[in-house]
Length: 542
Ligand code: FSO
Ligand code: SF4
Image (cartoon, rainbow, N blue to C red; front, side):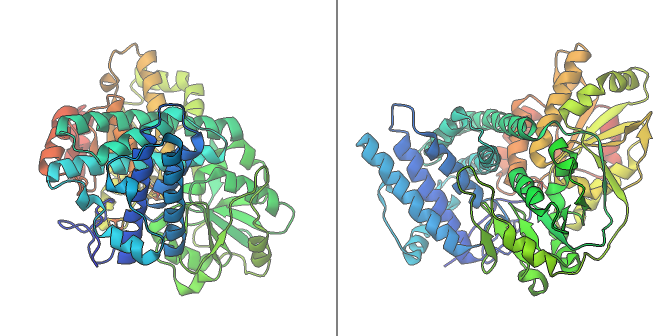
């Protein structure tokens, strides 16, 4: 048995991960995830035969299943096997509905055991997409974009928000990647994936802000209190809500980790006095930070890294996240909260967190807050106090090459403002970069999906300055990517017409030279260079 995975930035250069993932994913999990994607393609092929309006439960299920296969989300083979079974049952339900069976193996194959799923995986996965590397590359780009979109539509669905157009697009695009299409036809679907990405991010923005209010400027503490705490990570805000409600008055504090930091910016969560602060930094540092936290940890989504013995007994997953041997908190029953009581009881028996730093992080600059400050920002641009905005959103990662982003943040001229979102921010959000007339030099919009806010802000500035083209604004894009949600954000930005984006630390391995050249030519996408050369070019508008 062998695996092949090249979906993230830490994929082994030149070959992809083919023995074991750098992320910790082993061959069995990789094969089962490939089979799950294949089963989902079968659902899409059968659903594409349906002429009426399909119940949204199918789109929602596709969204969940793709999300399970996103990097660092779910390593639990049993959970994936169970999901493959459910996917096949759903596929057969649609076949019964349409009475049509597409002439494709994904629509007809059957299996029920883990062994059968692994055997199926030998002929599925991205290697089965096409013999032609360029076509395979384009299909991978579409699939990985869909996986990121799936994470976002899943978060929105948890809050009761759905976009049937995006659900319909899953069916169209997944059916397309199982078909023989030309490079031009696939490129058109790549652009449509960008359009669906914008819709998915807009939907999630609406879901989050309607449910929890618009993020506001907030100072978040990084020190610790004296009571035991629960650390919550990932991106699911409804889990955050349920946890804060259930811990109120229990003597247990709540801290955020990594991508949950922006929960502090929402009015609905800020009001809780036991919502103490943020503990630690980016996802890849979790094994150190979870160790010293002392209390229970809840992973609501990715990114999970291989779990150390020292905190295994106090780490939990929920939602689409999973890890073998960790307790999984089940989905909430209709109209009820998720039950975090066992975690709260465990927390009461734990020591308070060990302090690893004692400072603060300022954030909450999503579109509504920045637009509320628009006059101040526009004045600062007009008077020359702000010369340029540099969007440095995206993901963080393990590699030392990401020091580039810290160095750029430190070396940018003092009359520039960094716009950020996602875990990429941890490379520079604790640096004393100062402010410009009261406007902080790092404006954090929130989680990676809040990159949508940065696009809204750019479009608003374009309108205020009466410009025809978003590329005429004094904004440069210096984006960091790691997993598939960043692919989604990149496709969204390309779809919105942003040109000249710098992408690092490396261009995606799954892009062949021909596909990369086509994207570079059309969008002037470029790999990052040296800190000095990139800053000089950005300041000159290149
Ligand atoms: Fe980071 Fe992980 Fe939010 Fe990603 S925690 S890397 S792009 O999952 O989702 O930014
Ligand atoms: Fe490798 Fe990334 Fe795939 Fe993990 S997700 S197996 S690190 S390419």
